[in-house]
Image 1: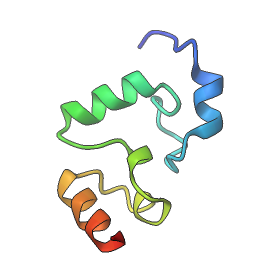
Image 2 (image 1 turned 180 degrees about the horizontal axis):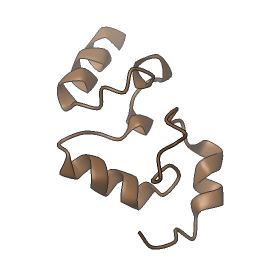
Image 3 (image 1 turned 180 degrees about the vertical axis):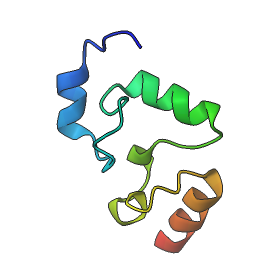
Length: 68
């Protein structure tokens, strides 16, 4: 993985709670990884839903429908 020039800035606003992830703060790498897995990155989930690490689109829709 190449060095992210915005890493420090990205980490300031990163809401992902999986701090051991090598892609944390490297948004391009994070999005590419999760997209490749058929998932969404943790930053699109509300905080209470992000913590369970279910990154599926199905979970996202379920969570967001419950917030309306």
